[in-house]
Amino acid sequence: MTPRVLVVIPAHDEQASLPGTLAEVHASAPSVDVLVVDDGSRDGTAAVARASGVRVVSHPVNLGVGGALQTGFRWACQHDYDVVVQLDADGQHDPGYLEALLAPVVAGRCDVSIGSRFVSSTGYRAPWNRRLGMLLFSGVVRLALGRPIYDTTSGFRAYARRVIEVCQWDFPKDFPDAPLLIALARRGFRLEEVPVVMRERTAGQSFYTLGKQLYYPYKNLLASLMALIRKPV
Amino acid sequence: MFFLSRTQVITALGAVLLALYVLELVRRRRLSEEYSLLWVIATGVIAILGFSTPLLTWITRTLGFLGESSTTFAFGLAFSLAMLLYHSIKQSRLTSDNQALARELALLRDEVETLRQAGDGASR
Image 1 (cartoon, rainbow over the protein chains, first blue to last red):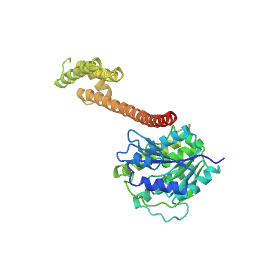
Image 2: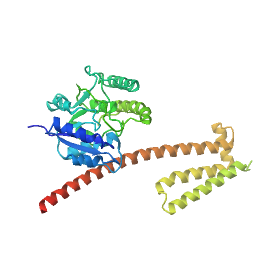
Image 3: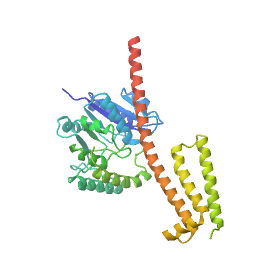
Image 4: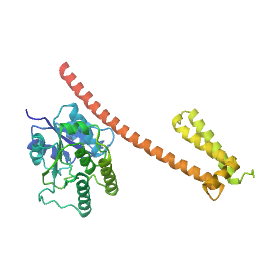
């Protein structure tokens, strides 16, 4: 039996890039269903998504990218999906890698697969402050789990059913990165990185504004520590 | 021995007025009993300290503060910090409740929409 796969796309004011992303997903994986979680957008995000023929759930207010993903997990559980793929609306994630990302989860080799820019040389160059952050948090994860996850900030991941069932109730509100991975690993879920090449975003604003860039390291260091000392439920 | 400094009078009167205002807010249902409790206790403590010089002097000596008014303000500050922390806790809780409600609303709206479309399809 083929597993039912849902691609969840959190979208906040992404009407410009969303149609292209949706068309690409449909072209490279026509059999998967797509859910756009419109996170309180003020532009036509929901309308362009519906026009592309995908399902849309609209938040009445903005909940943040983690909040949007959690809604996607709840919806996936309610509609009996086996695997959820998290994909950005802005075109950074090439749906051509969907199959590679899904393969280890579908085969049962791992519970969460992470599309990673750093497992093998994929030619990705981030600005220095992002690089520093990525280095720091892959170090934090290595300290916490005793093994590295190189691309902790990747938002291109696939989650197996048993992970979705946990995440639908408990998921970070803002940045679902290093602390989430630590918490999931401590719950006994197996994480695996899959090499992917990511692109520049096509349109719209990056989620990481200046204020968030300053808050991010504080919040994620503290949350990582908490994920480590908190008893996994 | 029993004399009220100007600071004490101001502090004590302020505390009494605040306590009355808090009770009035509860009467008009603009403040819940739960939140009023801490305020009533705090204003009560400050009013007592303001009026009763022997008690205030004893606490000041025991805790080693430099003056009676410092003691009064130290209690007030401690209360303010406690109240701020309490509100941060409440606010964190409200934020996550609010998130959950927004999420359930979005999911229910989707379900209603789906059911409505199914109903339209069936009635045609």
